[in-house]
Picture 1 (tube, rainbow, N blue to C red):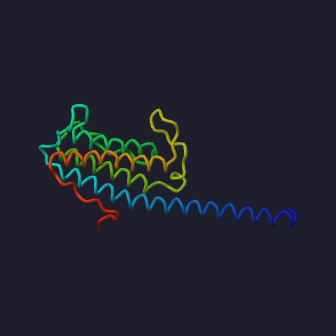
Picture 2: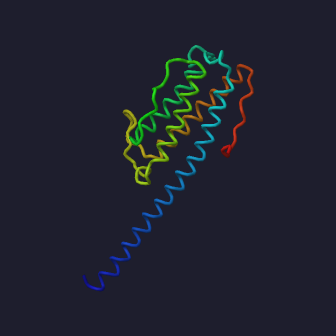
Length: 181
């Protein structure tokens, strides 16, 4: 290789290595931020689950809606589905419960949040940059899409569950932006 070819080739190599490093740094920063906020959403959702008395877990505002326990199980089941697409960690066992007791539902819900945390924590920057993750019959998703879906889906259904609490005369727990230590 001639001198005139070596310098541009070296510069291109350094540039692509720097770009890859910048991408890894961004993905790592994004993952860390997501996990921090995921911890908050998990704590708050579990607090909402804890706020409902055991005897009201079968409460539903209308016949067309899920009861409180079913809504919580649905939320947890979706967490597991989103993260199973990564194929990094086996889903929590046992699978989603059919029993609606507070103890069983809370345990499953907690396991679903822990599953998300485990998957995202174990995912490499390459896995977190994927854009080919399959979620059922839907088109391929990026890893970021699945994380955002899990976060937004949780917030959506938790918002509904806060209304369930209010309808039972229960003041819902207070949301916090930062995780508790």
